Image (cartoon, rainbow, N blue to C red):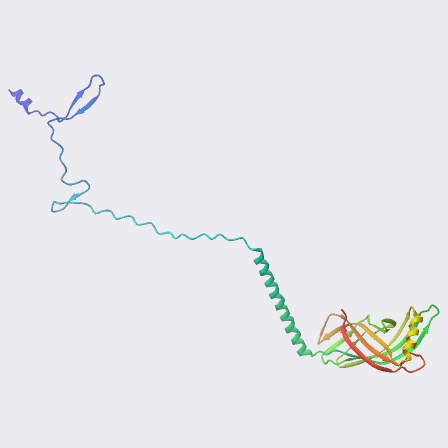
Length: 275
């Protein structure tokens, strides 16, 4: 009895195991007498409040939105335009040229106001023929003595007549004779008289002599006196670069003879740079 009671009080587990002889594995077998599983009073992930009611934890804060990224548009550079570059270069060149002309014009204007330049004046005082003959080889030989006057009317400008100046007498584009001018400096408001000896020999002398004799009968013989001289201008203490000038005097004389006085009936002299 006692053993029977002990056996009645023993409780068997809720699950038994069956031994499978063929596979030698253990499989769980549900106990039909085990009570069904119960639903927990508090859901998972929650806890009880002081009043006994289940309280769910606060929902997690939403993740912050990623910062907005502003997309910068990509600008593709265009290849340089050759025509545009040429236009820019031309504009810069023209601008520099205009600026240079303005500077030069302003400088020239200032110099003109300061020095007040005036052109020198020239005149022929006298003309004397010392020899005019026809040689045996039919060439014409001529020798003249010319007295020429040069006047510098400037107050602040001096003139250097450099070496290499020539004075010549022409008749109808034929050079009769030529001489050299001396080297000298002409100061402010100075007048200089030069005596120059001219000599020369011309081919086709018989034809030229005949034309001179026929022209002498009219009493008006045109002659062209030309002065080709290198000149340097001195402005204050500054001496400018040497340039060549041409003085041309158109004369009309009454005769070309060695035994009589020659009268200059008309004289007109001009002064210009020689290009």
